[in-house]
Amino acid sequence: MKKVFFGLFDSKKLAAQLCRMLNGELAEFTLRQFPDQETYLRIESSLEGKECIVACSLNQPDSKILPLFYLCRLCKQLNASRVVLIAPYLSYMRQDIQFHPGEAVTSELFAQLLSEMVDELITIDPHLHRKHSMSQLYSIPCIVLHASGLISTYISDHISNPLIVGPDSESEQWVSQVAFSAGAPYLTLEKVRKGDMDVEISAPEIAEYKGHTPVLVDDIISTARTMIGTVRHIHEAGLKPPVIIGVHAIFAGNAYQELQQAIVADIVTCDTISHISNKISIANLIASNIRQE
Ligand code: R5P
Image (cartoon, rainbow, N blue to C red; front, side):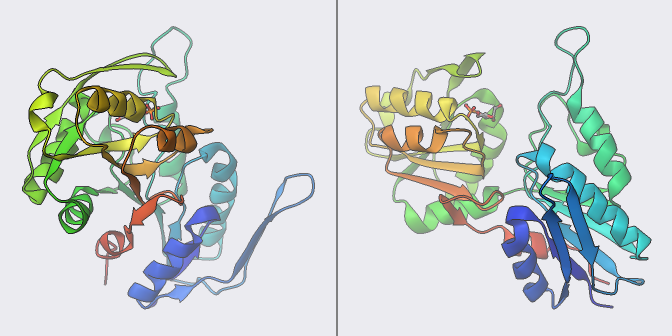
């Protein structure tokens, strides 16, 4: 039986790509806001006994979660056999402990909510911070995919003599993978975040790599303070202008423009979140991990 694909918000293109790749059926549905901002939803496709694949990247999650909830519930009410959520970017991964008494541990609450809405979750490089696996948060099966292979291929195809640079010790997990597959050297710097908009980067041994093209790789670019701090450091060490590669292009506020104004050769992101900097497609990676029966 054909799978039925839904694309919500900026994930419509991804749903259409997956649908084409897997010879599925694109859902006919209407999702819109009434003038008072309440949601109207109608699904016209027949879902009886079919598996629904819902693509909805969860950047800016607060405005998406309620329409997504309505859609997933309606799929079940229309007798879909299963609902699989494809959230290439998964939000609410960082507030995973209480830093101060009375704070909401939103990672857990958000995970509980999604676990009640869908039967399976497929995501890319979730920011597992202090948790070691998705099962510590989610009670549904989660397929976690990694963009490191796609990033390595991009680097091998487009950048000569690269030096892969991670902005902090946490980035070593994906930077080392990317460097290994691209056959390039790598190093990770030291980052101290003093506030949302205040990041200090240090890199003792970086000046040895003057002949290389630095390629800064990180999972999330949000305020871009981490990348801008790293770019500044690289510039001061006399290295070439770096290529910036991020998996998830959040770019809060003016972050993209500010990063463009730093001395960078290029800014490249995966299309887990739709953005002008998207140059690496994740559609094939996801398609090859959707269960076939
Ligand atoms: C941090 O733990 C992440 O890997 C990124 O380095 C961080 O999210 C980037 O944030 P920003 O762009 O706001 O500096």
